[in-house]
Length: 475
Image (cartoon, rainbow, N blue to C red; front, side, top):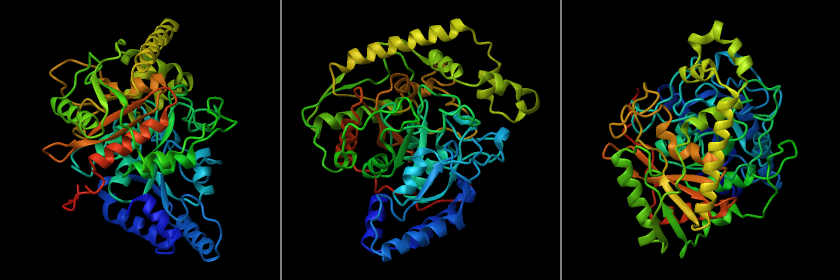
């Protein structure tokens, strides 16, 4: 059952919150020893919450939008009283004293917080691996990575361990694992979902990076599920100075009754400069064609024309990282820290580096805004490569070119620099049964059209019944 179907079944009395929880716990027991999606499973706390949820149903109380269904939370997002490590040995035993505002909103709508999902250290990689919990593996092929940094959440959803899960996205970390795991995931407009205390409260360890590019976002097996969860967590919050006012968008309605006929859509296969795997090019181009052939849109091949911002993105992240405090840990913990993070910490950044990164970011923003004045949506590949070996930090080859470690993430991190809403949706599967994602990018603050386009594509090219492979084998 989809997440929305489970919520409705609980409200209708067809299943109980204990049923939803037991189904999740059973699936975790069956699969997670080999896939390694969860870092914490709060079985007792979840059972208590399920019993309370059942009493509310029996008593005829008003039920929330997530009443009685399990939700998994990425291990970069604080949950009060629940071990939250940020994937780092530096905070291996850290237990937050408060919930993230998004977690509070999930609880307020009756969601059962089941546990935390695996991440790379502080989210600094597009794969999922760390020195505490080790690697997370892709359920479609356990020799492959599920992506990151919300890899644990992606695997938990793709395998039915939970119906809903939260990720976070500073350079693609909702969209990357959603693409690699065959899911829908959305990074709403910057500020649409508030962040607090993560990335806003400097007293909270591990949360002071990515501040100007970070989002928390929903992931799901259907567009309806992600829209449903987004409707719960979105909305202004006074402690986040970047949070946006409520603009009245009906996220759920946009996902259930889409009509995008007549839209003008751009399709960029490679930004005009990126190396992209030929299979990805073919799959995403075919998916883009669906918008013209079946959804009555006008699709034009076009590129925004901005410069390659990979170095600027890395510098932007470094500029918002607590370099001073983390560098203190290098002497004692360097061997246990992720190499990508170590590289950032050991680089001798200058004020000029950060100034140049700001200028490039502004160029990208202006080019993109001018470009989107001509189009309602922009389609791109989500990632430049299919899922690759779980032992590698980056694809081994992209069109035979010598590219940087983040080059395969060109399509995701660029949209973090602009703050536009963007979703990924399954475009198809390779001959090896590995998912490929199509990225749908909206204009400034236009989350509604991104969700509508996702839902329309889901109707034209349904994937949600292509469920976790039945021939699962232990890793």
